[in-house]
Length: 549
Image 1 (cartoon, rainbow, N blue to C red):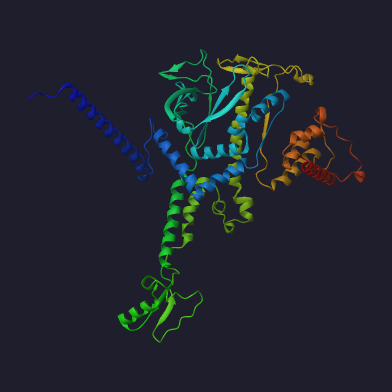
Image 2: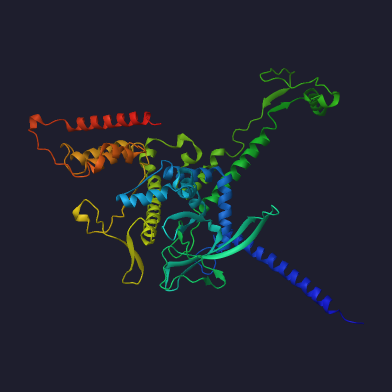
């Protein structure tokens, strides 16, 4: 008998190869499931290359879990939304000290593409939400080579597969490896076509002496689009951050399950509202059942309808009708509070914010117990202040590097051989002391007060600083700065426009001369004067607000 032909052997080999690939994929999926199953065994996890952080597969699973809980679970959604509202709900102001720097900064902030990415209210709220959900943000900069103008975009954390660090310094990231699926519409057929792509993106601070390579392996390097990575809920030796709600998910699910079980028990009890006891054995029970049963299914018309609410039951001696007692027969709903408190502990949001129950909060809670939560929100605002400041400094550097940039500057290497941008001296400054110094690149990023009762305290502090608690205009602060602080405390939006109207041509920027002290009997009531001034300023702001188009 002749053996199998060459074509048959090739076909059998292909079949075996396909079966092997299917089996390998199956076991890889099972291993991934086992990785997650270890969660219930001593809080263990299977990590990646080391025992310091999750594998990328594990982080992707956590991100999917966080997304689902944010969409579905009320406790998780409320905790994230509460922090987001406190951090960015009142907006912020960005202002550079030097007019040239401010011109470049405001042009970057007002760019429609940049506003849609971060600098409008909704986009900022989304970025804070995503940072809590995924623990990572990857901003990417598109820099125009001639003008240095910067466009801001972001890469989804799930697309970043790995971070390549300096082999001699694990705190110095060099490149980010990205893998994503690109979808394009075939204009001739109208059908979408997908293509998997990979690329390396340099870190925004990585400037190798010989320039970036064109490829790393067979993967291209996008040298002109650097990436800025923001990570939270991680340690210094971890490449990626972890979802900030990860610690709350299990307890939020337990709380949900408890309430579902409690609702099931209540529903079971509600099936029987009344208990009827009658004499006569089986015949008596059958007679009672026939009297109470509906006739709709047998006659087509209801001839024995149920009594309306508030009806009176009349029976013979020996027949007893009473409601089914459920008091104390089941676990109380309030027993789930401990589970909900674990969600509060994991997120840092107090329970009355999660449930909307005012009975768990009071004045003492608002003034003392909520101080940790207030500091948590301030900490996140400081993180964003730092992130925004570094992004804007990058924008300034790009303008100074570009041949047609608006900011004059140059690139120099320091003693470590690293490139730094140095701005030219401010030769056109009216202040002679500043003409021989580099252009001031300072930027003020201001958030409104977190709590409403902070406004009065801030106004008092400004007044005390300006008058030294009793002296008229002590000359400690310029009048323009005092006015700016007061406008910020009063939460005015168009501060710069008002200042330009009140102090044209740089007026009010110098320290005022303190007036001579009056005799004790002639000394005016400074506190009353300041209160009146603040009141008049507030009325003027309201008037200006009402006159806007």
